[in-house]
Length: 191
Image (cartoon, rainbow, N blue to C red; front, top):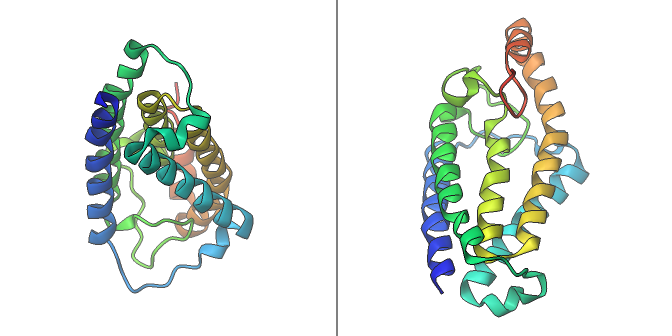
């Protein structure tokens, strides 16, 4: 029971932050999500949905996810809580820095600007990077390999999708984005 409470202490604020930022930037502008490729479009959303469903299922009834549980010492599982809070702070910083540029696809909005503030100062795709510690947090708290594996799969699909996103950003911003790419890392800061 305490690990479910700890998971809720990460899940509820993350959901709140995500919904707040998504609702704040919603628009009637139509974005062609097919540009990311139908296989990526479908598989990414299905994997993302499976992560959320598995987490909610575990929160409601841990037995429902017993098929993918692993035995972890409580001390290791506890690492999931501070890791989740770090990921939560990271996601808030990323979404706050993105502002109205937030989309759920590789397509830029009509009023899109090149963001180079906040974590974007060092990393081109910090939102994608955040998936790993966030997923690991829930995998540890739930002692569940599926949540970790599905989160890793989501990150890998986002990494593949980021190539198309960067093509769109180069087409939109030209040399400004090329220079930005040269100065920053895709998922981690350049050394």
